[in-house]
Length: 321
Image (cartoon, rainbow, N blue to C red; front, side, top):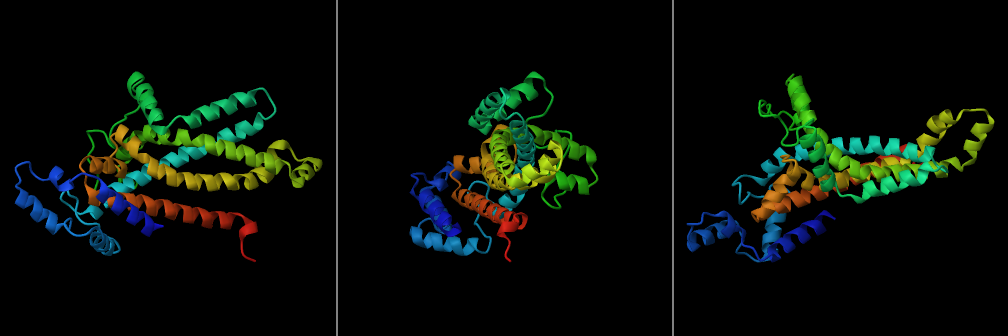
């Protein structure tokens, strides 16, 4: 899969009728200077040769140098990837809390007049893309009520701490700067909400459907005959079995959330990998676009693999005997 994605990225980007060097070099550069740089970066070689050279370097985690930033692409990714992971992790936490609570609520009102209302509401929430939620939250909580910040990762009075792990929240805690940690967490609320809210209805509906299937099983009826209360039946017997499909969906959605941070990072001026990707597209920075695209692919495949492994551990039916 990674090989196929790398080939697709490389070939498609080379077919775009844009000269990245002409966009990035000085306007006063001569044709000879541009051709010299093109030769140094290997852009004058056949596409097949370019790909094999790039693949050989990529396997050694060397993605070349950014045409626009004039520095290693690997260092750019190492600087921005933790920010995107933090945002996606907080967003999946928001989606999980809202989704699980909403799923229990949908199941609780089954067969009542409230069920179609909540059903329509969940579909409406699911239909709105995350960037619209992002704009709505900025207008409501950032401009109208002015409750939360909506640009950057830290307030101007703070400076970035020394990067020990690359994860801002963790680095602020390691540095003992709890005031900076609180400020960074507050800056992440709106973008995490914008990402998480849009994904929560899918979890709601899967959990509701899974609970309905579980409640049709015989052991639920047997628990009722033993005099066990409905709350205990839900929490002790039904929930632990019904939640498995929802947990699987959460893991899969984490991969989608990680890739979906791009627009949200731009809207909130969040310095993550998505913002860097948009900047690279604007400047036709091919080495950065290739590396970021491949990084997204690796992240999604890794997350899906972890989800499959976790589901196997949580589901006794799939364990080897």
